Length: 627
Image 1 (cartoon, rainbow, N blue to C red):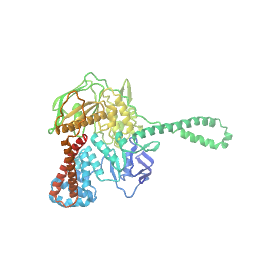
Image 2 (image 1 turned 180 degrees about the vertical axis):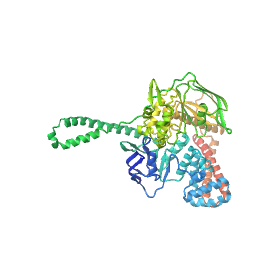
Image 3 (image 1 turned 135 degrees about the vertical axis):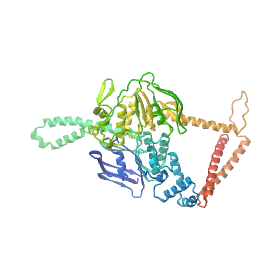
Image 4 (image 1 turned 120 degrees about the vertical axis):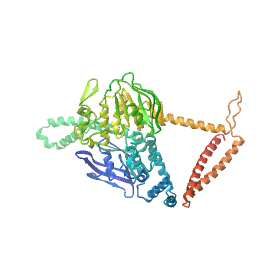
């Protein structure tokens, strides 16, 4: 395998905090590698060092000379003054420049520019690339080409950054949490795109389905070193457990031997010390080995929410629209204690609007929302934690309460509660601004839970949390006795936690489905297949006379009539002609000899031919089933 990247003995500190030390690994051509580590261990910093956007204190990073490297950071570095189209095609390559100019000319109907650019597109062989660019932009729902980057939301910026790096076609792709701010539809598209691509990949992600289906190697960094696993996430879990078990068994054996050696050391006469130096040396080696057991620090959530009364939350005919666009239309639902509901849908269809309605941050246009007297909301927002410059971690907790009631008479101080969430004494007195993105999310989650809510509302809670914290949060939510509403694109998380789905389908429509996300998706695909089958049967019935019903005779398989056989033969001829026309149109479009109006006309005709081919091929297949 050709080596694309070699990292040797890399070390980095952030102030007094050691992020990682002595890291070494390699990535070969075509490998798709995921990097796993706890929050605060410097995953994003490591990716930035590898990409040349930060420096290490020690060690080297060496890429193969002739490869192009692209990076998507958690917060992409974009030029606020650029339009989206300018930013996406910011690369200086001639291909990117001519496609950007062509797209601008098409968007603004500039015929003179098109006349100049079409031959350039031909010369660069840019038509296939331009089609792929449009597919990427379309799948990521980027159609606001003239909008300034500085006016984009955080989610839009992330999608523009992702499109920019994918469109640049690097040989080596570095992605830091690529699925953050993508809805499930986009995530599944990206999963398929990267899975089929030949690009070499190094990424950090918490999305376990994404990780399992895309990556073929996992590198784990923990306090005991770096470990590589050649396989997907499921394989990693299995082999990691075996590694820890094997390591701890060796440590237990060393501890048993150490007890024997300790007794020998205690009883050994001083006068014979010089005759058994090898055994003394062995004693100290055993002592070191016996102290190296892997004891993972675990965050265990056991916070009891306040009691819920009989009436919880009731919505009756609730509607909301902005600028004539419906986000919720005539929605009614009565919440029941203990139910856990996941909310899914494309970005911008009203998921966050719905959460703001039920918490009273927005008022409905019509309908009523009635909240029970005992309901205590805990609302975890996408925007994350807010803090003042210079504020310490412990100050954030103390500003809410000095003492935290866990329920059942259990009380913790602010410091103890932070330790409960794996914040060390040193971290508690460090500045919030120095925490990693995942550590800030964990701190925010802590501030939500410390209020003892009995109705939890979590809007994208999985963004930036490491896999260990996600597992703990999932177990806590499974046992949570109050009501739970979750908006998340993390399919693994939803499958593990929720038992009901609100699917926002657009135009204010919400589908209520009993089950988790995978069950909902499977049901949706079954319904789609059933609809397509009905449509095929309907087309069949419309193209032939109704069969005569004969009583008391077994049903026999129908064969092609003479007329249908003639139709099938005619279809074969028409398909041959259409395929020839399609090939001629494609050759003409790539010839570089067409004027702009001819280019537009032939492009439209190509679309019509493709539609006709699809229609006639479907009819031919229907007839072939009877042949």
